[in-house]
Length: 447
Image 1 (cartoon, rainbow, N blue to C red):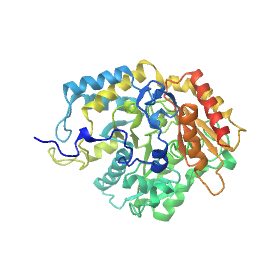
Image 2 (cartoon, helix red, strand yellow):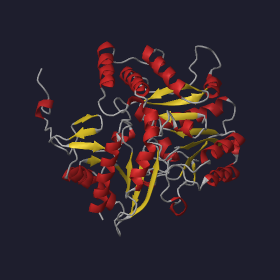
Image 3 (cartoon, rainbow, N blue to C red):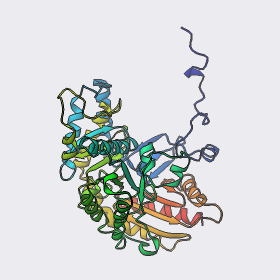
């Protein structure tokens, strides 16, 4: 049988134009590409053989480091054994094993895991569960969802509705009707150069009482927040803020969802940020670190009472009309189990906690460099605000990203003119020094 004219054999491997890249300045990238072709532990490798220090754990996700042998072996073994298994009305053992392992890590009675494939899907899943939960309990009027300014909850229509990043919302018109937002917890005048959780700002949780007074509690289904806002360049919660939010939600019968897609699996020195902040939310969303970025996977961990509210009616009936073809994909489950083994065997969560003060001290060493307006650290995360260039917001940040890769062999994230960093949890003290030496050079270069 003749091959189509546009067969694989006629493709152009170095043609950059067909790939419409996500969250990327496509024209600038394709004019001067930043290509990666290999990875191991703390580094990426370019096609021309340069070694790039990864200061962002890929995309906040390779917590155990790149291409770890046990994870690779688990994926290869599973692919040879069974490529795919449906989880609609069928199941495979690793899905149940992984759910059990995750539930054991989660605090309190967060005992039930619903799998999906990304953080965006996890958020939309949690929002749907929240709406359905109130409906099955006879409170169908609770349909309003509350997010927070400067929050990021993925790119589904639910996620952008409760998200608070302007650029992610303005192109797409009205998403979910009725979503509202708490104010951001960040105030530079009160919190500049905070190490860990800022002292100022717990009272900002009281904004939820105002929204309840505006909308009435009987219309509000859930509040969703990131314990630490990552995508807007690391905004730690003020001391006591999350506990106060939990108290207000309890008072009004509102579900509290922690979006831990970034903070989950060791980023803050614990399995979940909920443990660090001694707060048990009603649901936790996760993704990224569950497989150390090796295979797409996400999910929602729900409290027992939420799960059990659905378990009524005829035994043969579907309780929740939601799911994805690739929920609990066998390769993802195998990767997840191997990743959790690595976290346990190498005690990486405790290691991150031990490295936190070393990381913070190195980050604060950048204070006083040209155009540095603020530095924030918590766990193994750091955000560095740079002053914008006149009439060119975001240009200094982009130049920092580009120069870091091409001139200093380091990769980090940017959000506008802010630099965000979150290295793999295997980072050494020497590599922390190397990261911040390189970042200092980049900041001076774009002054």
